[in-house]
Length: 116
Length: 113
Image (tube, rainbow over all chains, first blue to last red; front, side, top):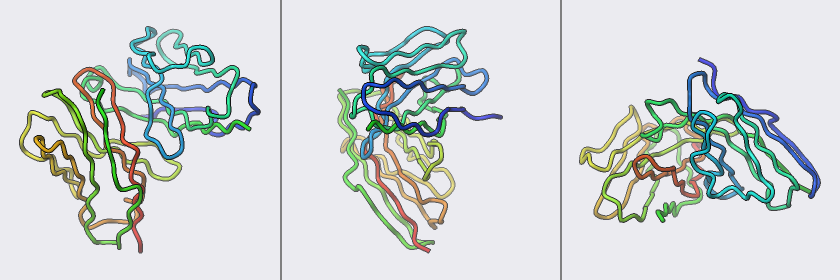
């Protein structure tokens, strides 16, 4: 079974530029999550999708971050304009209908963003 | 809001030894889950072990076991016969039923050959 795919793995940009990250979840997983992991901290949920609808985006900085999950499969997270404090690893995760309520998430390898 | 505290930023242990990672949490809920997730260097995070709060019996997965003390709000992870592949960041996490995961800040564990 293929895992959660993310790209790009690494991205370096200057502040005020824009960046987009892509995620393809495990086939059949209806729930998709984007987490932000700043160095020295645990992952923080940015947004959770159930199919193509948003379940929780309470911690997404909506003035600069946006995310979409068209057709309920893959997803894109965009940052525009980027700030220095956005430097982090962006983790995508997915879960199946059988595991979403029990906390078992399947993570991708992450996209590491450096903002200069 | 729930909080998860991991007070050991880094630990190291000799291969084949036993190591215990600590975690405490704060909640007023009675029904919840606790987790240990492992994040190896440059690899994806994976679930190591899960504990349901309503179960008194401590969860075990092969060399990994937990010591769940509900009254003390403590949830430690014991790794027996540690192996080089156990080198990773370990995150303790809390989840109220049907809500989002809250992660601790992690413990970096190094297994020394």
